Image 1 (cartoon, rainbow, N blue to C red):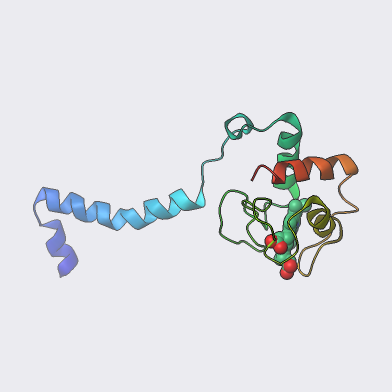
Image 2 (image 1 turned 120 degrees about the horizontal axis):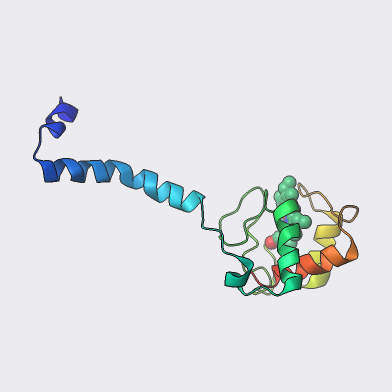
Length: 129
Ligand code: HEC
């Protein structure tokens, strides 16, 4: 059997086979557990840092902040660096604020959940992405 022959192969070949077998696992776990940077590493000021807490509590389960991959909702990486959101709406505080307050299709609204300060902090944080 091929697998058995593999283990009677010379030692360097065996460890190579082992590494090859492990590689996808290593790559996969590295992608899934992106190392979380501290607020300081990200250069966040206190307002942006508290916006990050809001994001972690209410948004992170559906949106990625530091990857362009979509989750349940579109990635928010660089959302204010482009002229338009993926929905085609202009990428500005008014439009993004409305989406956050009132929701949009499968996204719930947070107007009743977040106060003015939390919303302002959240927007300040989203500008850092
Ligand atoms: C249950 C999942 C879910 C949660 C929680 C959620 N969203 Fe969303 N969000 C979505 C979906 C789905 C869309 C796409 C809506 C559409 O079809 O236009 C979206 C769209 C958006 C958009 C527009 C993006 C674009 O490119 O058009 C922004 C901005 C946004 N969400 C921010 C947030 C923020 C900030 C929070 C936390 C307060 C949050 N979302 C929480 C699911 C979610």
